[in-house]
Length: 143
Image (cartoon, rainbow, N blue to C red; front, side, top):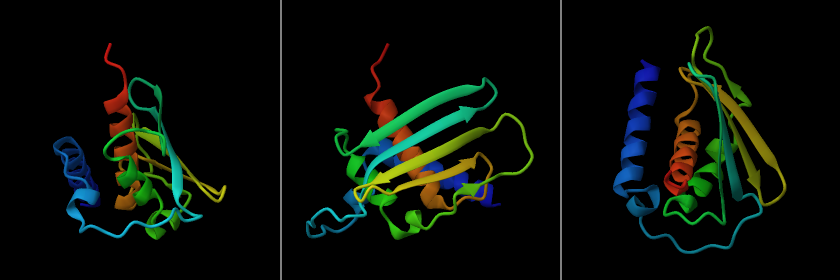
């Protein structure tokens, strides 16, 4: 059942990204604050595996110009994300995508979390993965 809830959450997140309703849009206007020492400034997602054996890299940083960059970096800076375990395995299975998320913070600390499709990982991890990949895809040149 948790896999179904996670899938629904990922669909809602993707829909929100595509329709322009981000966390910053829904939240009440908050006062501006100075960058904290533990704010995220770069998020990298490595996606490997799957049926075709892909090896993809997605990266978003403070210099990335996209409407959801601030939302992504704020999510990766939350206490909930920073307290994630290093790994969330799914157990036996084939042809799954494996994700390695690396967040670099302003204080020089780096956090790395790994998971794979079907894993009972917290929703905040899937949000960071989905937003990072969506922002990177939105900015990729069309061939």
